[in-house]
Length: 164
Image (cartoon, rainbow, N blue to C red; front, top):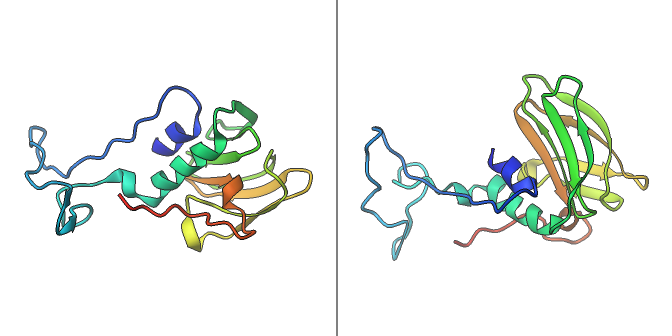
């Protein structure tokens, strides 16, 4: 849901971080998120800090690359379980909420070149955008592929580094 919220141009997205709890009335932790001993996020700590997850942090960068551009090149799968779209010439995404892989040939607005999927990080394979904008994707079930102009392999620093 966070990936779609950050990809879609509607409204003003707000990523909320939360804390671990076991009961519906549990209060927030007494431990601050930030302290002189570091950040109290993740397993073994009281705060979840979803905003620090690479897929969310990198989608913020994706959204910046998209700017105020409207949705273009929209495609939906035949079964309605997957969609793909671009935002201007700066960012494109394909999302699959289905239970089987979505194999699709798309025509995207990104400049031709080799890109890394900013949602998968360093282990992601290269995605090629042809001179005509053609892209062949295999989007895994309950997954997405997100590319943006600053995530090309031509000397760019494509992965957001979180310092907060």
